[in-house]
Length: 225
Image (cartoon, rainbow, N blue to C red; front, side, top):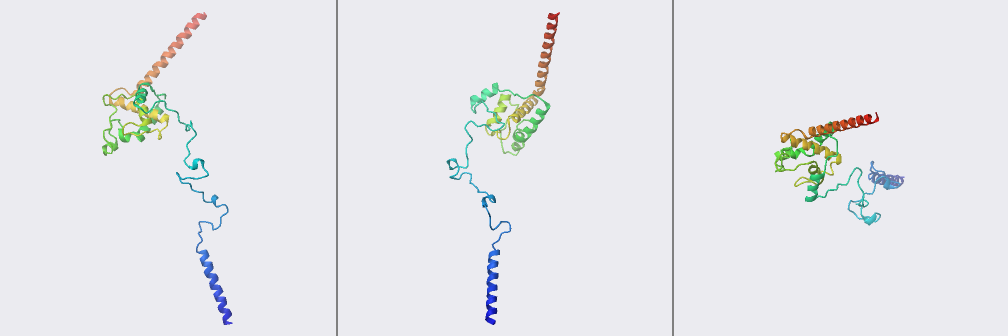
């Protein structure tokens, strides 16, 4: 009887030990058995790894030749001295001068430009004051040929120690910033704001067109009589 009881005790002990060894490896957060495990945990592919299932065994695949990102428009001026000179002379802001564009330009300038160029455009941004960058010129410095095109070109490619902002801003953003920079330049030089002169020019053109239209209508009316 004692032998039987001892065997039973040994069997129970072995069962308990086996059960504890199995359950001790359980992870409550992860199922122990998975059907189609890739649906639970995706296969991670290293960025520059080699994988037979991919073209050229590369994860990084170049876009199809000639592909243009959504919202991106080709820029026809090259990142050269000649390209900059052409952009400075030829490129004009296509946006209408409105309060909304001017306000947005000021806001974007504060985000991307003010830390170096300063809120007033005098080259005294907070990073300059902390001596992180030195020698940032003022927009009013003599000899600087600042135009719509030169500002836009600098944001596209960068200039000197300033990096390109093409990846951070879209075309409209850059033209809005350009408006604000031209206003800052005029303000530093003690001149009427660029935006005000543009608005006045637009109003004068509209008045001239209206007068010409009225004159044409009067002429037509007289000819009919």
